[in-house]
Image (cartoon, rainbow, N blue to C red; front, side, top):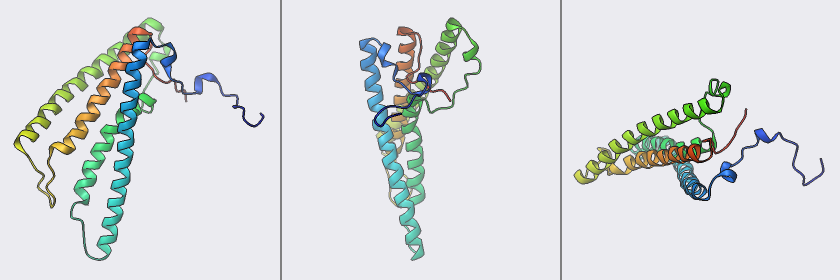
Length: 193
């Protein structure tokens, strides 16, 4: 191999965007989903850095018998936020655990039916969770509910991270469903381990 050339890697092991065979309208929707998922993942990474800094600050303050009195609460909110904000990107990037022992042995039509059932089931569950969470956020906003901690935080703020993560996850499921209908497969990336 000469400098500047790519190594010989089998094509099926290279993560590739499936947008090459997507219709233009689906490509636009997929790009919007990807952009939002990446933004949520960046916010998630930023929150992780802030949580790490807060924990380190708390450790240093405790050496001098002081405390922020909020580290445990803020880190708990942060863990919930990064979990739900990073999930859509993880799904899109193919990083979620997926057991394909049965679908790999199916022919094309049964595989599409199984994939459609999975997407419809996951979408329905996410829709129910999203609707419930939306009502919860509106109720917390209307009541002006505050946390009962040293610094009172409006409770709708941490709940909005959960709401945003669910909405982006549902959007990603919809994109996969549209891709299954329009192209015949739902995967954005083909990752083979």
